[in-house]
Length: 146
Image (cartoon, rainbow, N blue to C red; front, side):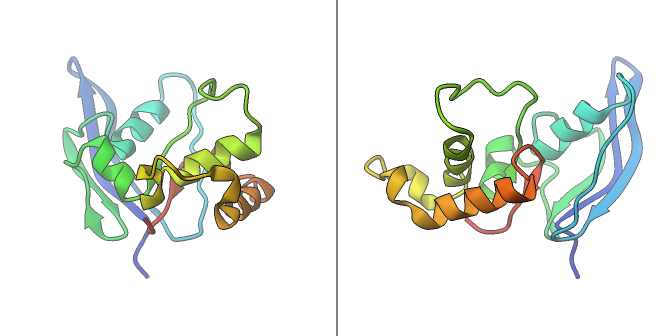
């Protein structure tokens, strides 16, 4: 089975100081991994490399077997890489369910339709509710559909 995410030999250096040196990781479809470590250990750098916010100095990042190391962040987003941040303030006046539904909408072609009524997207709302039930609303998600 092809890993959903495969990282091999990832390296990132800032001003001569390696923030990440030779990191490798496989995450299979449906599998969850926890990245922990002290401040300065490189956790944020790892996520920034995966999402394309930073470009690696060496190594490879593959999503479902496709090499994405040199793709821009928006190109990775179109392939299903989504990220949440620790402080979520974009839609603070909305419910958690609506925020998650909006994030899932961003992975669909339907997002380009300015006339879409989110409250009528029952399948999307059900998917958001299921993600919340599983506790997945604040993890890095890897999805293969569009």
